[in-house]
Length: 483
Image 1 (tube, rainbow, N blue to C red):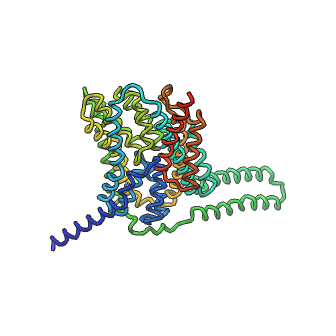
Image 2: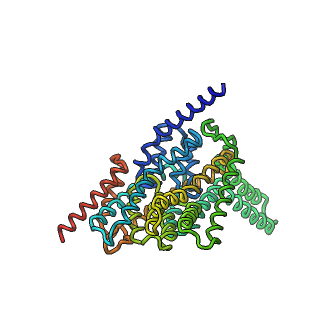
Image 3: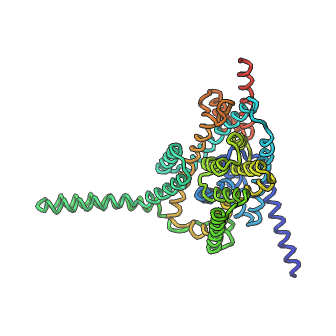
């Protein structure tokens, strides 16, 4: 009897693993364009085609992944497979998703460590073409995600304000503050708290005015009373229509996790305990080995990065280039090529880890592996624990309002990512640190071509990126021939 139950359990695990492999195997090779495009791909696959989750669960997961630190699209894929096939399926999906790009970036670190001081101009043109096409793809993903996130005037305003704020300023603490502010704004708006405060102030002022004019007619007083009461009734009705969904949403059993909120809270607490230990050792031990410092720096980055790509790049530059482990030129070469790699952008840390180890005389495999674990572990552990807590919170009305605000704020920050890459996408011998794509009309055309091709002609992101590289080489050939 026991052997039969073990055999059945083994076959069940094997079936789920095979399903995970069959569904996810190609994503790590074909998902180009960064998190905004990844979210669009996941929606089409898991909501529209496979129906593993419904639209509302997708929006909830999107909010969770944006609100927590770490790689947003990687956490999204992990959560979807966690709901469908449990922990083992989620872990398998994570490695299927992340390893192809990580191995590619590891190979790139070895290649970059062997190049000379200068690169052929054709290479710079190719990299600029990749960047320009990537901007067009991300812009398209931002527009498509906006269509889902914008449900009323408030969400439209939040998308615009977050995009504008993200373009105007950039800091580690800034993006999480913007998303928190978006969530609070949506809650305040949906619960009409400001409206009620205004009505209370207005009623107080009217009472003071009536007290000062006691000799006035009764009819006028009654009119004032009608004036003060009617807006309250109207706003109460509006409040009921906006957040009056008192009964909890009926969620299919398959969308629940099989562990309690206490287990989720324990996982989150255990993570922060390990984080404190790692940081204390980093700051107190004398003569800390370089590879441990590398791990600690990336562990810190994976814990405090909110907003994904727009934030991870300057932070990694500070933690690796400022340490003197990787040269600024090699950092920018890796960054340009990473834009055209499939899978999570956080794989860029693997390139930096491998190159750091090579430059300092350590094993490249050890450096890349340490970087991979350090950058991904915090986000995956935090989202896993949060999924247990989310089961308790997901049906509360104020949580639904907050989710709506976070969705809108996160989509607005995607436009910030478009702007950031646009500003450093043009690379050449004279400006290896990058210039705006707008400095050359050719790159504007490449960006627009990728956007139009994807939106109106169904051009897949990998094809658009490849065409961008080809157009970059064509520009190099034309310019070189005319010189």
